[in-house]
Image 1 (tube, rainbow, N blue to C red):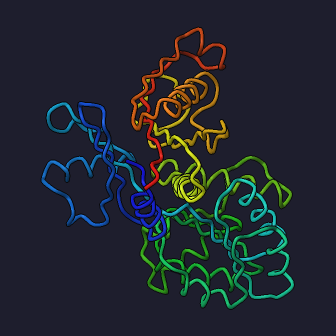
Image 2: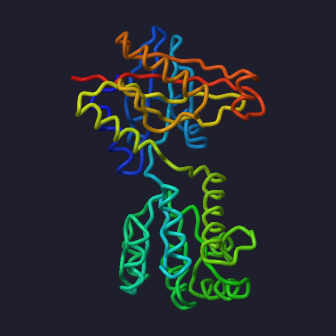
Image 3: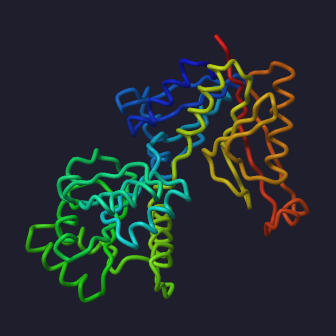
Length: 342
């Protein structure tokens, strides 16, 4: 049941950067939602196995008792990029990250360039010495650090401070010679050899980038590639559940759609959320095309009938797939839940 209490609890998971959303779908067609904030709340050894699978994939659809199913999905803060330096490349990268919808933080110790970062639309601009600002950043594992300062000494200060922080990506702009020099200096300061090996320097994918804007594209492409490889994909759930809370506050009826399982060429992954309102307005996307049309139709039928829960099995056959530009068809299992006023 999607009432105000459970939605607020789910929002809280995203805000504190950690926890699990649990959907328990019973054989008779009902769905019960709850949250797990800590491992101590796991009911049994079986749940520990399910959680391990969810940690690897971000979600897990598991067989429960007496025909029931349990869907676990990770709730983490939206990923962020921390850009150290707001010169030409830092400014261009900040603009690109904002456009992509990534939470963007810029650290710059010069007032003029800090103001330029604000003009770029960064979510947060910190005008302080680099090492101090990095040290005081709250820990978040879905973080990418990009070091593009105005000089080698500033880069070194940044990297030394970053080495003690959680991050899935750290990159530094500079030549291979400069990167090798930096590696030796960091090693002399006691930074672990493995951390230095994982440093992306020179930064960015090799696309022949020349201009600040082209370099920014290569850097962001490398970040996106790395976060996907490591399973740190962008978390959009916080936005969807925030919107769901707003709709309940306004007493606006809606259906929350969640992809539970996909096979074949389905465009969006498990755990993708999508809201369909009674007014037929939508928020987010579940893949577009026929799949999204099927979900919207099923959601409208639920809203008219007053049904609270439904499982939709959408089948995108080869003909439908060809019309959508896919190689072959796919099957998608979608959970539909109605927001409930209390």
